[in-house]
Amino acid sequence: MRIGTAPERSAHPHGIAATVAMADRPKRAGPPADGGREGTGTAVLTRTRTRKPNLYRVLLLNDDYTPMEFVVHVLERFFNKDRAEATRIMMHVHQNGVGECGVFTYEVAETKVTLVMDLARKHMHPLQCVMEKK
Ligand code: TYC
Image (cartoon, rainbow, N blue to C red; front, side, top):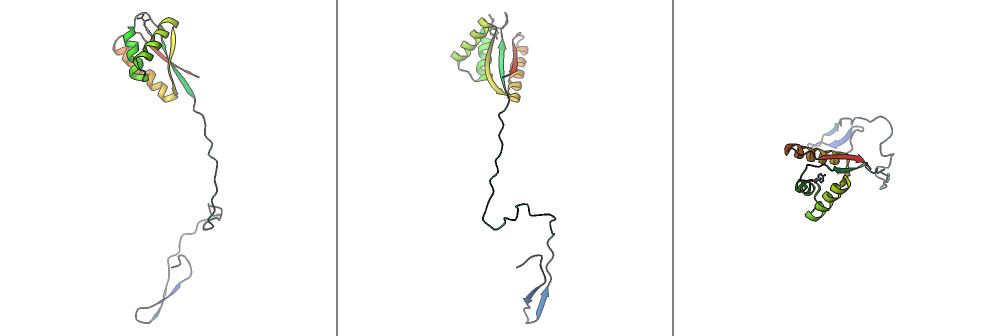
């Protein structure tokens, strides 16, 4: 059945010819969005530009009071380090003043910093965790 065109002739069930008017399809203004390729079996591939996300290092800072075991726990819990790697990073911070826990996109880094700082505050440790753009 054609849609949105001139009235169509149809055979009446009792042999009487009838004219059925079809509702007009709303007509779209302007050229077709597919550039007139509808039904031609062709497609257009467009290049989608990808962008590298800005990355941020999350750092732990040394202090004289936070227990080493607490820092190791933080690295295991929030940065998915095993005990050996967490201990290595903690000792690096202890000896050098600062060390990297991981590299993340902005919102992930921000969340990790907040989680570490909240836990340190809860335990009344002066541990500082910061992020810096790579
Ligand atoms: N310097 C702390 C101590 O001797 C241990 C420590 C390590 C603290 C790393 C903070 O980010 C830190 N207890």
